[in-house]
Length: 301
Image 1 (cartoon, rainbow, N blue to C red):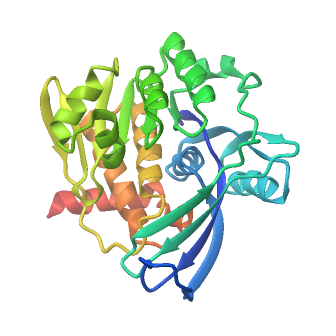
Image 2 (tube, rainbow, N blue to C red):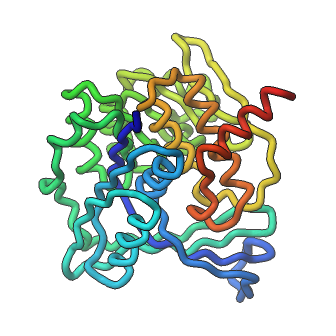
């Protein structure tokens, strides 16, 4: 049976420039390539769910402008069911992204402070019919009430715990069943670079499970008080843009399908690794067959 994941958070438009190198001084850089495609943690997580065979619903808001309307249209093209409010007078979020020849990226993000943050219009009754929810940190008022609704309905809730203010991070981590941090976000949250110590500090706040994405090194999480790891897949990286968002979307779908922590991490590692082998952010998200093939290939080695 197809599993439904409701994602809540931000949807933006990425303007992606391929450059020979990311500059470390204020100079003019000539891009070798350019593309535009939708982005944002929750939105790209939802597209990942759809690409991997799940039913994806996205709750978000954008400006009532040409960029916002294109964001909504494109999500539908990817197979996502968008439930998105177009906010009159506000501008939609955009990101300028530089991707260098090694696949590393620099992101400059714009979010209009006039974009309405009121989540009162969200159809929270629908959460009970979901198999999992995925919340990002970019629309905290909405993520709070969706995580609370999931808790009340017994629906597993995954938090894309990326960088945010300390107040927002603690409020949302405390409401999640699976707090999945990026490495920089865990360091900020816990005040330490040590992964095990950081996860133990996070576990004092999160009532569920805590883990952290480690790029090419894979994923680490706590089993009781011990640090567990699932290694990443070795691939030729050409573009890391969106890799973390893809991990969270795949992880949420795996949890919706009833996988345990290690199996969910392995599935998400494979999806994220394959994304890194392709340029274009969201355009590089693999499908289910490709993920299964990579996982099977690694088992044979």
